Length: 459
Ligand code: AMP
Ligand code: ZN
Image 1: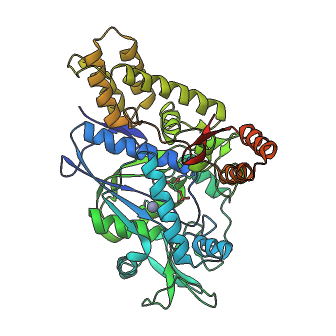
Image 2: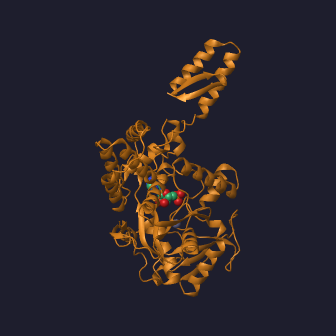
Image 3: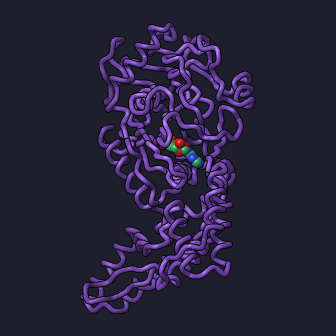
């Protein structure tokens, strides 16, 4: 079955035609590791995981690269402001390197708890500075680079089709001056930094280069690492929708400027998770981490189910009510699995398997795929056939249907209260122990006393 994907470049659903089938080269922009990722970020990684698993379902052999941005991503979308890594380091009183290590681990832990497949190659920007410098040199030799007081810039006017990924709205925004630049030496508003000089600033992360000590611009890492690991033309490049007008537009400029070849055949973009009708973002309020869901008694898989209820190209508004509905729906599916425990898997579910596959092959239509799952559960298929189908579904949607959910993480405040209650009991202060138990219950947890001590379980 052919896979059709909405290509932001052609603005149409294109059939995937890999350069070397069944292999599919895939680059997915990864996290900037200066803080925890929020559940909005994970919406993008969940859609990319669905893409990888759909490729597997359709018989392809995806080779996925994901980068870890651990240098050069500045606090503005442009080239001004501070490096987010250095900001994180100052905030926490640690080194930028320690911050990167800590938040990379936190990211990978979250991905595991969401059941996301690891990328085949996970690469850090700081491990590939030499390739980034070499790419800037190549661009320089081709006349795309000019120097200002604070760094080297890409001259976007030199590339005739610069901005081809942008929509009409993006271009109109540019014309009306939505992007304000402080650097007066920049020749054009769309020009962007390839290499920035450390200058007088005290930086923890800096490298020698042919142009002086400094650090790479944010976009160059993705071009350099994508081409290093996957070649000059990728089959698919993915990321969140915010990357279209700047990051991905500039990745195209750098890569195509250097090679003269198309950088990626298909550009795939996931829409935003919203909160109160605004993009969920670290800078704005309402930043929800994956661990926050656990503290409220949700499994990461409940959140994943919620993501599947909307097409990846539609915005999704996060509410606790919708997460509760997703939890209930997922629990019903788990109950179906449990009810089929005694059944031996049998064939006979082809009608539903085909519907499920066709839905995903049509631009990863997860809501339609879920509808096929529910119809199969409601049908009069024999139990064994339902079981076979659910196994197929689990391999693609990875909703934790066949395993017990991990117990919800107990919040630190509850852990402290449990210890205080045990101490009160040991001193035979039973009225105080009961008061603490009540307090814990009010926080949504029950106290279970056992021979190994007391523990909290979610109400
Ligand atoms: P960052 O760590 O900021 O570089 O972002 C990591 C990924 O999350 C990128 O692909 C972003 O486009 C994506 N992203 C950021 N905010 C959201 C959001 N609210 N909803 C969905 N994806 C997002
Ligand atoms: Zn990128």
